[in-house]
Length: 145
Length: 129
Length: 103
Image (tube, rainbow over all chains, first blue to last red; front, side):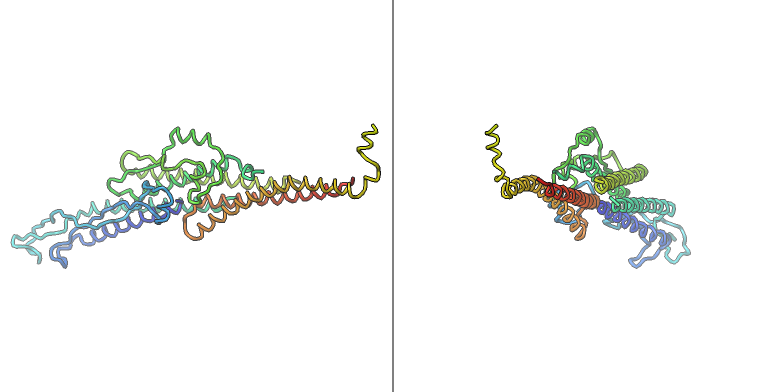
């Protein structure tokens, strides 16, 4: 129960945000991928953030009151977007069907870029917390000097 | 001769308040980590009049017996009593400003405590001369 | 008057034995009172040292000890020890002065 607790929580936040950014980067890289190994176009991926109640170890849990006000975060799942694919009329495309329609991933570049900004901002906010904790801890170490 | 008397109640008050500031910082970090978590409700310590009254009546602590209960076993409040749910999601700007404020407040208290210790040491070493 | 004289006794009573006894008694009172106090204070200081030690150990083993509590406990242990040393020095000084008193 300490500043170190807050540090762990913030670092979990940074990890989660970084995972999200990786997923977003993958989406952006595959915005025009019509062919995948499973067949069919690339399916847009999205992350699920979930709270993880904070507990450093079992000992502490027993010894102290159980504190459920603190939560770390994790990406509990990376799921595929279930929305329909984008349909583009392009008969000359090798992946066109009988009607000349090519299915593209339903990825909006603008949407993914906005998400990128959000993830970056959240990542930096967590980094700000860690910075402040470091300042506070260093100050504490100087008590009485 | 009670050694602890030389420290006085201010030291204890500062110490307990530092513990609460740590708790607040933990809550802020929890809020910011979960900034994109759906259905997460932001939390903070509530400094309502109960806590304020307690703080002003604060009396010096007795020696704690359980080492795991330092901040709160020493006659201080359980911080859990004061954790309050905000209405709604995490507001990043509010959290960041609270972060800065809490950080400064904590460091200020450490500064004060440190100075008091230093002055006490000075009084002890120079006082008898 | 003569009673008083009787009480005080003759000069032969003012020998080394009686004077020595008075000195002992003074010493004993001094020792009992201050000794008790010092011993109690020492116990309290020991307690503060133990607290600081306990927290330091917890900090060394894991991160179970709150940082500010550990630093504060260390400072308290430091200061109380300093105080005790100063007091002890003064007490010893005073004791020596008393012992050198001539009767």
